[in-house]
Image 1: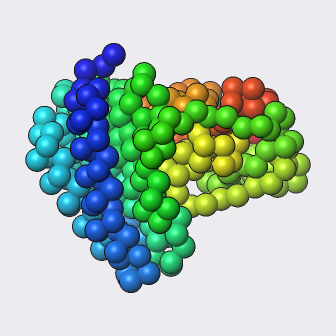
Image 2: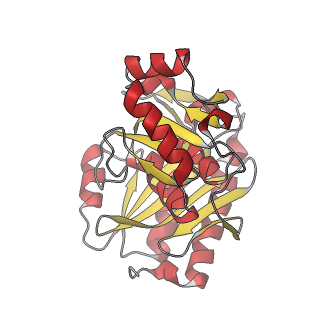
Length: 270
């Protein structure tokens, strides 16, 4: 088992409680009372993003100063430097789903992962609107509001499944194949990558596809699905998680059997 403070339940609870309180104070309190500016990459930035990142970094440095810090709103140079830390690195998305948050859609989250020696060892995804804390520690399982979370669904075939698919970031051929010959029962796109991973783990959608997401989007959710017993890979059929600041595709499913059927369809469709 990888050595880190969160093998101990007391430290783990301190981390979860701290993130919940910060999210309620810095994010939820600003919901529907916020304006947004446009960043260079075209995405949105709100006061909640900046304040949640500042306050979370301070909280983490106070309790666990041995780890570096990478926030979505940090510079690329700072992000890459943090990822190269020999002791470990926090990875924070202060508001995952800022576009939803900025227009009053209550589907957004705070995502926090801890990476040590290239591996995610702990991850939290907190949904302030529903007061739901998804969390996982490597080799210790996943949980939802302190109750063990196991990826399961009564759906046994792809044709029965609800999918979570982000069409905007898919290659045209694959997107067209899915639009004209959908192998699943229904499709959704919610706008928070971190919650997408967690909802697949919880069986709220059973198959998932996204064309390009960053490490702060997926790191915590990836571990939560992995520890819950779900399965994932990239469109190139490699591990989604890499300790680099780069866009990654993601295919996932609640159960290994559904994952295999989903992958078989995608191999042909792309």
